[in-house]
Amino acid sequence: MQKQQINLLIAEDDELQLELIEGYLAPFSHIRIVGKARTGDELISLATLTPDLTAMIVDIHLGEGRGGLESYSILKLRGVHLPTILITGMAPHASVTYDLGIVDIVEKPYTEKRFRQAVEKLQNDISYQRFMEAGGLYVPVCGEEILQMTPADILYIESINRTILVHTPREAYETKIPIKLYESYLQDCHFYLTHRSFLVNLKKIGRIEGTSIFFQEGNEGKQALIAEEKTQEIITYWHNLKKWL
Image (cartoon, rainbow, N blue to C red; front, side, top):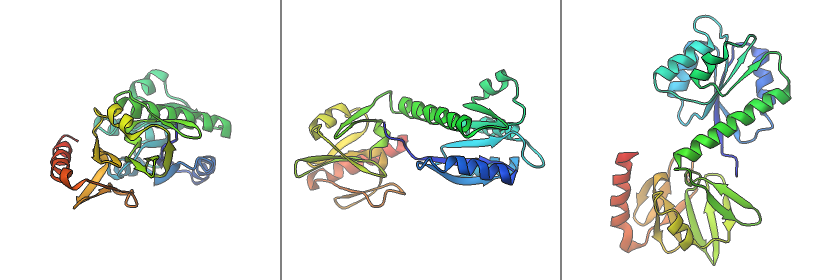
């Protein structure tokens, strides 16, 4: 299964430890650091306001004021639930972190291998949550190699000159599975055959202009089409769907 981009917030007040974490994360090309906090208050603010945040790495001690664990607990009470690796010099009692939903606890000093194990646990947790949010459904993509994606990974599926392409935010993957078979398989996942050549994930639409479909922020380079006779039907369906998202 392809690795989805992870947007990561790091909470660490020690500059050397922050550099170490960044260095250990460098080989993970799909992980993007989108914020850095040095205090508990900064952690709470950034975790609440940063759009599309996926996960956090939090040091238990953060400058003055609230520590990392206390700040994480406050975020949970506010309804912010993010998979998190906790870094600490002295691990808290296991029952405390289990109840809070911490993915892994990394005790200082730690090796790159131990850090990588924690990141892999984080990735597995994120993949599982996305899988369950997608209804426990994988979408097979059969090209040179067989990939498994969730419906949420896919923007649209396109048929062009007898080639079927599965478009994700970052790439397009060729598959041998016919678009009609995908239509049948994904009919309960808000995928709609907007045009004989386009099966679109309606949850990913950003706007519709005439017979052109444009996708949400960050996917501006992707575009699908609507058959003219289906335009009003799809716009109505899409607007009704947005009310429930």
